[in-house]
Amino acid sequence: MHPPPAAEPPLFAGLKVIDCATYIAAPTAATVLADFGAEVIKIEAPGDGDPWRNVYLRRDVPGLPLSKLNYPYLVDNRNKRALVLDLKAAEGRAVLERLVAQSDVFVTNLPLSVRARLGVRYADFAAKHPRLIYASFTAYGEEGEEAEKTGFDNTAYWGRSGLMDEVRADPGAEPASCVGGMGDHPSGVALYAGIVTALYRRAMTGSGGEVRSSLLANGMWANSIFIQASLCGADIPPRPSRRESTRAVGNLYRSSDGRWFMLALTNETRQWPALAAAVGRPELAADPRFAGMAERAANARALGDIFDAVFADRPLAEWRQILDAAGITFGIVGTTAEAAADPQAAATGILRPIQHTGLLSVDSPFTLTEAPKVPINHAPPRGADSSAILRELGYVDSEIDRLRQSAVIAEA
Image (cartoon, rainbow, N blue to C red; front, side):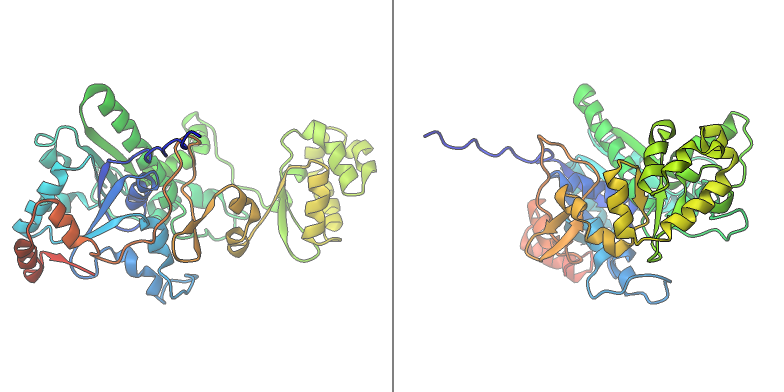
């Protein structure tokens, strides 16, 4: 018998990444690299470290889920090693220099002025480490009057880009804030894409380089269809209310148990008769008011009223079966708890187990069939690997003890 083929190492095995960032977007880019096997060392300042570690304990954030487990830090910093290092101290900066010399990628979202004070700008590393990929993330970009302006995804991604304004339920409705990480996580994936593109360029040329992304850039990319319309001279109309929509076959409806779902008939001509039959009103397909797309648009209020009454007759579970059986495109307005228990997410690996915990975590949003991700390990305690990392850099125990006593490093 032939022995089974040896398992291939993870895709990014041997790739060394420094995560010198806080909160969500920039650390997320490093997390995706770690998902594929990169060694990621998260550097945190002495004291409380990354403020994102303690957000789950706050009670002044409206709607923040309460848990004894540090769920936000877990999903954004799993599979990393943790080093507490004082970059304000000369000895701490010397540790970083030694670490950067052995690393492939440096990820940061420190304010530009802080980078200058600490000596961690791209310009501070480029000449000495020409193969280094320096991944820089900011709120509003690195040029212009607002380069130093601070921001989060609710301000720079969701609010500034026009997205917050566009998704009002009706023109008179108050704008709604986004949920935590809603703009940060896709922005982190964009930064990851830039890093991988730079690594490809390095493989072709031998040279590292700088990658930049921002919350504003990603928010505008998310809203790019409407922004492009404005750039082309179009007026952007106020978003109509549900009742004022001209597409009754692409609208929200409520079932008898109070659950909302959305019809989304893009191939309206083909699917319209099937929808009419599925809801038990086949005669609607022959009704002259609704015979064609133009007629359905002109009489959308009347058709919407009919659908309101029809869909209010049955619970969501029944409508899901009926519409699925008819091949109608629709989607439920699910709750977060339903998403966390979604069997389709489990079947496709969107929800993956965290080793030795009995917990699941949300996977990063793409896979490679020939390059599986590494198992998920829990996010590390603050400074959990400080001594081990310094030993790997060549420091002896007496030096490590001295750095610990002078608070240049710290451990969990």
